[in-house]
Image (cartoon, rainbow, N blue to C red):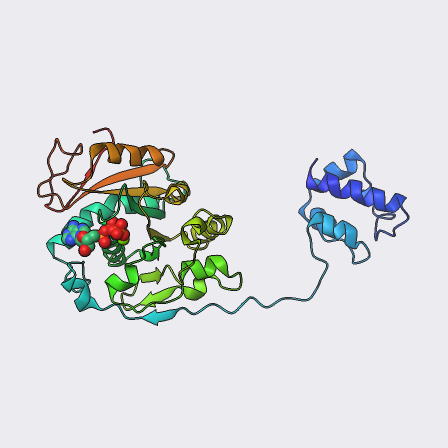
Length: 331
Ligand SMILES: Nc1ncnc2c1ncn2[C@@H]1O[C@H](COP(=O)(O)OP(=O)(O)OP(=O)(O)O)[C@@H](O)[C@H]1O
Ligand SMILES: [Mg+2]
């Protein structure tokens, strides 16, 4: 039954119950006959009459999902995020990419790495990727280079003219983004997940890299890892995806084989980058990790710290660098 038919039925019930319904007696168009309703559906003006009944029929109004309250509520004041300074020299000292050195070898490598991710995020791929702007950086095991990759990727994308980036430290059991960027501890994701009065946009940090904002992992919590798979987290991801559809959101995350929550998180992402530390992680671990994210629409494997990127290593190495290369999951 359509909304209009439901409305007409409800009005008829009210009339039968003796509730005065404005215009119902005189306005033949509101008569709850099928013909009357059909006529109404064809007219926008009439439809809006049905959807905005008189104040005398609050029940009908509630059923129609329309408000009878003429008072206009002012939109909430925009949240102004706090600004922090990333220590650009410390970035370089840690071997991370710095916006000051856009032509370094690392910058060149990340220029290649980010292309397919941006294309998928912005719908420039062959097939559109649902939630393509949510990109999770993960690995099978600890210490494979997730944070290093997530930060470099975020800085590299933020240096593009057209893209804004949010870097989320979702590796809540082992956060490191702020420290690696030389930014003091701050509230963040866990605060927004555990305190209903805190919106994630309130704890988002703007930075001196103009198009880069950071959502820190926040105040430590005993159930931090569990929270990653909570309904509150899913709701936040929905909000992020719909509120910032033009922003690329990169999640540094816990390793897939060490926490099941990380796999749940991956299930909500449009793209997953699996960082594999070359000559270190066992092939069986990589395969197992890939199996846990089977349902993700886009999975890219990134070979980190490889001395050479070979054709027979992890699949089709592009052969463009000495640190990174994408691989296929078939190898
Ligand atoms: N391609 C690289 N070149 C140089 N150093 C790297 C590279 N990848 C990672 N590292 C260094 O290796 C160390 C581990 O990397 P990182 O912290 O990014 O790993 P992780 O997967 O995030 O670890 P964890 O699971 O502990 O969070 C860091 O000191 C990082 O700077
Ligand atoms: Mg890390």
